[in-house]
Amino acid sequence: MKKVIALSALLAMGALGMACGGSDNANANANANKAIANAMNAANAAMANASNQLNNAMSQANSAMNAANSAMSNASKMGNTTAPAANAKPATNTAANAKPANK
Image (cartoon, rainbow, N blue to C red; front, side, top):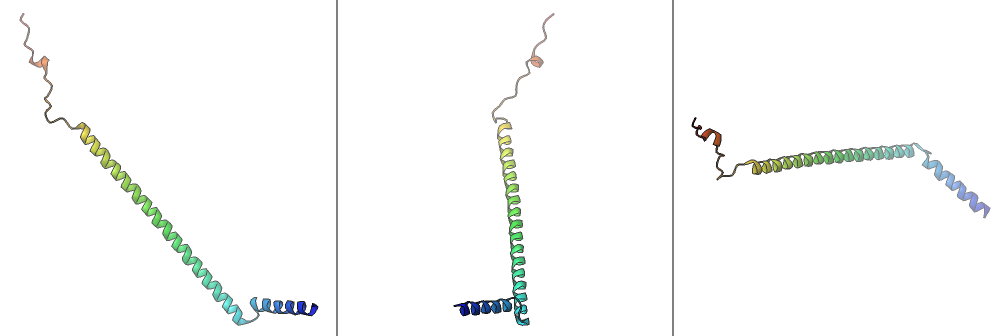
């Protein structure tokens, strides 16, 4: 049993040594994997940044559209409330039309 444990430990140490740069080929593979991971992280960050910028632009466009709709609605309401009636007659000026009193 002790021999099995010792052999397992030896195999584990050998595998660990190979994984940690036991040869130039392993180092090259590890470096390539790191480069690929870094490139994928950079691409992911760029896509997230682009998505955030797009969301900001859409939010600004929606705000501008809401402001335009509000301005148009207010202008329409003002036009409806300040327009004179079609059949309205001007007020008469009774003081100007009054006859002078006889003295």
